[in-house]
Length: 119
Image (cartoon, rainbow, N blue to C red; front, side, top):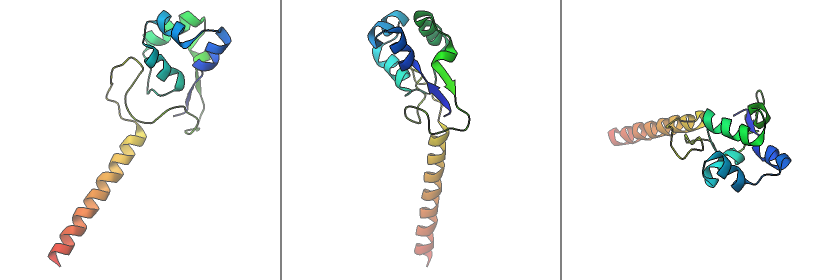
């Protein structure tokens, strides 16, 4: 994912703690921590708006696009967690690739077992 979250840097610049920001924005400490560390697949615009309003910044101060740099993100692949405590059901590209590879491997094993049985 070539989107880098810079929330931690903005928070240091503004001298605000995670607890203070979470209370001001109106989301849980845990969910804001996930956003800060980049362990989310998305952030609701309303949450981003509240964060920017509290920190006195623009979305571009928090989010950075790095073309072609798929290893520069923070956090995990997978899940549909946008930091609001609700699963969105969105699969990551990596998760889909892994599932496809596992399905192919399973199919290959089934075919091999059938060949052995018929031999």
